[in-house]
Length: 298
Ligand code: CP
Ligand code: NVA
Image (cartoon, rainbow, N blue to C red):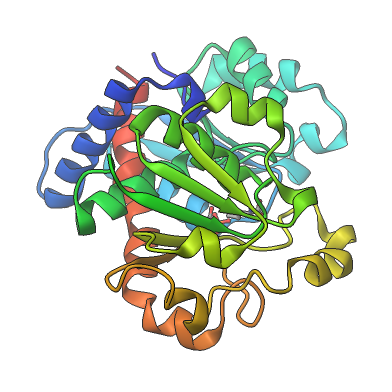
């Protein structure tokens, strides 16, 4: 049994093996007979909204022979204050695996500890490991191996997606540049924990210069809505647009984990010019998560 709670807890070899398995899942979709989740029910417990993660996991569990059971946290007793550890002990006796999207990373970790079934982090305030594994897969599919690449993350450097990028850089030997306003820089403690070649700057142009990948995420993550007005003001100037793309390598990939807010973190023209990459990236969530599911039950 394996959990996927954080990129930090994976070894480089595990990441490489998951990405290799994902390539097989993608190539053989609809043709492969392996059903590692046959006879299993997997709970998807979501405390936050989701399109991609929910759909890709529901489809992925089904394609591997299992049955997904979507549980909105608001509609189960968890939403009325039943402790995580009690919810985990009940579900652990009834279902075979859990995919959990919530606020605190410690809640996902507590769930995994008490449920004693494979548990997958489907996004917390601190991490989004499934997203970054799919992003790595997408970059390698389009541009080859990660070592030597330069990824520029532009925007909220203290968000879940940026954190997972940090841990990935520490493992895979590519250069990560984070362009963020000072209050939204990753915490020094995290930078130290992640290691790797990471440069933080307040200058998006410096981060983008000759980069292989320009990457962004929303400026107002789920749960931060009360800070929206102030965030929109602070992040002005951190948009991926034609002027910023000009700084990167001519063949640079422009990526977005989605959902995208045009006119904020990316402009309409740049988004549409890179829609093929961005929606390949979204599709790859399915293939990569199928590899994660098959590994989780090993
Ligand atoms: N990128 C991502 O996780 O999208 P959803 O919030 O729609 O799942
Ligand atoms: N940082 C974003 C990611 C959405 C997939 C959020 O947490 O809302």
